[in-house]
Amino acid sequence: MAAYDGSGTHLLLSAFTGQVFGHLPRADQRAWAQAYLTGLLTTEGKKSVRRIAAAVSGSPTASQSMHQFVNASPWDWVPARAELTRWAEGRLVPRAWVLDVAVLRKRGDHSCGVHRRFVPATGRSVNCQLGIGAFLAAGSQAVPVHWGLLLPGAWVNDEQRRSRARIPDEAGHRTIEQHALDLVDALGESTRLSAPPVVADLSYYTGMSALVRGLSARGRDFVVTLPGRTPVVPVGRPVPRAYMSELPAALEAQRLFDHAHGGYHRIATQDALGGRAERTSVMTALVRLPEVRLARHAPHHTYRLFAVRSYAGRRSPRMWLTNMVHRRTDELTALARLQRRAGSAVLELEADFGLLDFEGRSFPGWHHHMTLVSAASAYSRLELSGVLPGPMGGQA
Image 1 (cartoon, rainbow, N blue to C red):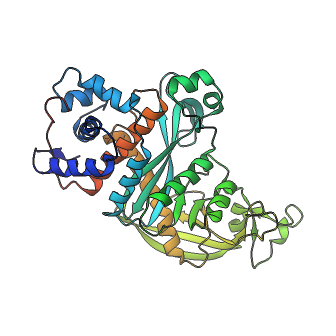
Image 2: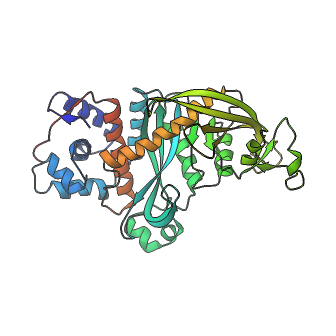
Image 3: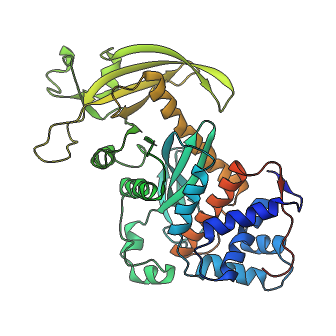
């Protein structure tokens, strides 16, 4: 991370804060927003409110005031995320809106939305909050701009918990795919550009039919992962005879390619994450999803299913579904690879911007923190050129 040197970059951060958080009604709130951003950008190690306050202010009451601003102040984070989206679009024209999940490990059971769940990436059950994020992605960049927080039934239905965490009445039980669609809607309302395709790898956490149906109903182009056991109906070619007795109308997506039912292409790609050429084989086929219809009597949509197998050693190919059936295979695989940028961005948020360090327990506080963390990350990625301003000095 770059270091502040007290130069004119402080003015850049002030202008950035003014654009993203200019809707805050009070001058002290806007000052604390800039102070928190400065602390996220400069504080070494854990970015607790106490450590951030000590880094940006010499006042003995700074920590209490900053905690009040982040966790208790009733400011609206939605306009800030919309402005952050528009600011980022001025510096990064996104090739995709990428949806990804952030697992925020927590101790105890008081943080809003915390629950125990199995995490496929680790193969273990952990105590955590589950955040669903939306990223603007292009090239090697993925910038977080919007977030949703999963609230399990134990939080939605417990009035005492809701009251303690200040969960608003409109925040009820929503599945991960509903959160994902909410994020797409929020991006659609925020952007000043034409909507790019939606790229998502949520197959570990949610059934894909509702997400596909929702994106299709919104008229969004998409590339989403598909679990290998998902039933699909091949379009334009007969189902392999061996499966006619088992699955008269459909077969598992992974078996479709096991029997070379799809078209077969071999392409070479350049992986910007590793800076090396990555040779892959890509198999494609046109399919329908038996369970996905937009209306009761509407015809099934036709999608392109493609499986990407890396020569580097992935045993099972990752399978993706898209409604962009006429796009070139290399364009589709390039879009699918953008999902990895979001995963890398989440790791960077954890390591450099205090994603896991919020110590408050309220629903608004979580959203405030995630908005400020996203803003700090976007500013660092898209604005900084190697220098940052020094400590604020005195109370903000």
